[in-house]
Amino acid sequence: MIVYLSIYLLTSIVYKRTPKRDFRLRRNYLKLINPLLGVKIKVTGKPIEEPCLYVSNHRSFIDPFVMAPFVDVFFIAKAEVGKMPILSIGFDVTGVILVDRDNQNSRSNTRVQMVEKIKAGYNVLIYAEGTTGAYQQTKPFKMGTFSEASKNGFKIVPISVEYKTKNDRWASGPIGAQYFRQIGKWRTQAKLHFGTPYASEDRRELSNNIKLAINKNLSQLQENWTEPFIPTPEEQIS
Image (cartoon, rainbow, N blue to C red; front, side):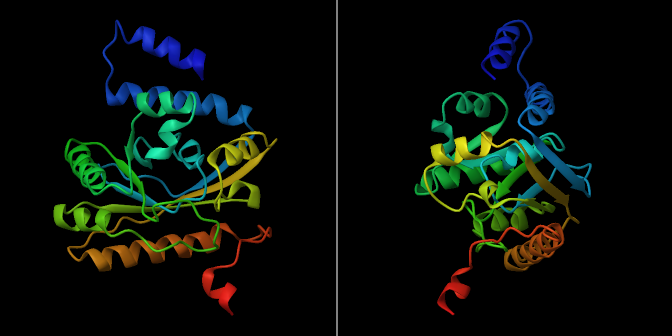
């Protein structure tokens, strides 16, 4: 990654950096590195042709590794990943918008950037749960994204991502431990599904439809993958 980024930044002295060029760098890099890391991805469905908002469930910090080879998007990620050695440089170069979810100003600024990017003709991808999770279905969604989408008339495409083994699903704990546990595995099997786009002027209807679509597709992706998920809070209580 260091070599790849160094060459790219040096060539940027001559060739102007643009989102299109940054996305191409990311896509080409991941097509090279994913096979080396043993990441195997099965994709169903496909992105739409027009600029839109993609909303996905969030399983792991390598979710962007799985998605970015197939769709050019500005990812919205929590500020903590910006502190990861080396990866933080790659995030900065290839179109990741960092948000401090505990800071109201940061969240507001991120929503402004999201709207600007889509209106400028680019795609944005957000993880509406706000954090990773290892439950079988999604956690509750944050509503800010859907408020902006409904207000601006953006289409939302649901994305479902799933991994075969529980070691690939990051429930909690230090990011460093998960990083080495996941990157150090010989093989990571993932499935990715692009769903049908939705649009609505009602943010709650939009959120509910996207959540239902993602969970329905997760159930399909999980077929024949038997490693257990952690219990949902309701299951723990019962």
